[in-house]
Image (cartoon, rainbow, N blue to C red):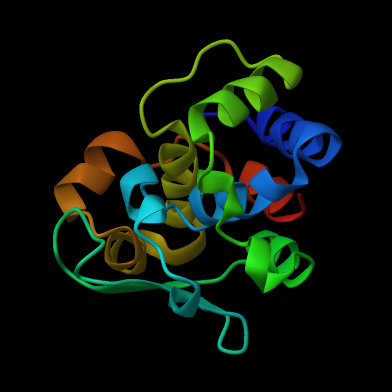
Length: 161
């Protein structure tokens, strides 16, 4: 998991060197969407009016459709980015992600670290049942990996990023 400070550094680095990467951070870091699911995302899956992101059954790892409530940090990033650039982060993805990571001085990057960071905060925000629905996890996975890893105060700070 990333700390709130690391999340802040990542967003700051993206703003400094690659603003077109911010929508990816909105989807993965604040909406908890898997990298592969982000890659299969379509513009129409992102609904600013309803403040939700749909993970269609065709895009979902589990092949089950889910609707994730859009948190304020994700909404703010997407609202301030032209829709035509929401998915432009896909080009040269790894190179861009690594450059932002280096700029943010984040050396460790476990698989799905942004999603796992979001999941720990979802547990605090929504409780077990709603968090598992939003993430497409089972309750057993939530209990094993994400319960009470971040404090409620850390979650509130994360929401203010």
